Amino acid sequence: MSYAGDLTPQQAWDLLETTPDAVLVDVRTVGEWQQIGVPDLSPLDGDREVVFTEWATAFGPNPRFLDQLAEAGLTPGDGRPVIFLCRSGNRSIGAAVDATAAGFGPSYNVLEGFEGDTDLSGGRTVNGWRLRGLPSTSYTAGE
Image (cartoon, rainbow, N blue to C red; front, side, top):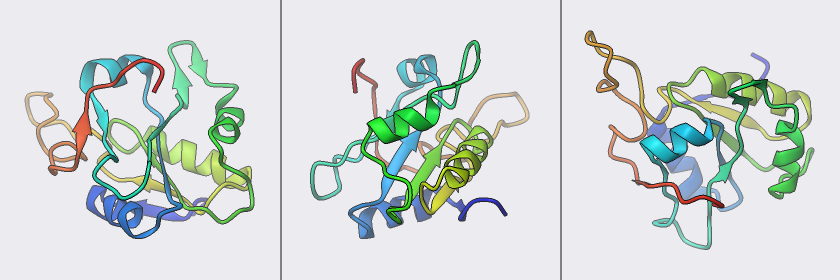
C-alpha cells in the first residue's frame, strides 16, 4: 500500500479526537461541499477546522493540490496524520497516495467517504461519514 491505510469514518473521527495535530482534508469539489455539506470539527477541543482542497476539479486533476496542502499549514516530513475524505472513499485514495509520495502524513483514506456507497436505487443511503451520524454542517465559501 502506498499510503498509511484506510479508516472507517468512526476510526477517522476517533483519530481526530485523540490526536490534536491530526488534520482532516476534504478533497471533494466545491459543488459537493456547497450542495451536500461538510464535516464539522467544532465538537473537538481547540480551534480545529477541515482543510478544503479539491483533489480533482471539473477540469481534471488539481495541479495545485500539494501546494494547497502546504498553504494550509501541512509540512512534508513532520509526521502529522492527514486524513483524506471524498464522497465515497475513492478519490481520497489518490489524494492519500499523492500526499504520501510528497512526504505528507502518515496519510489515510476514509472508507465510505462523506456520502457513502449507493443503494439499489442509486441514492447514497448506505453508509458514510454523514449517515454514520458524525458531525456535519453546511459549507460557507471561504472556509
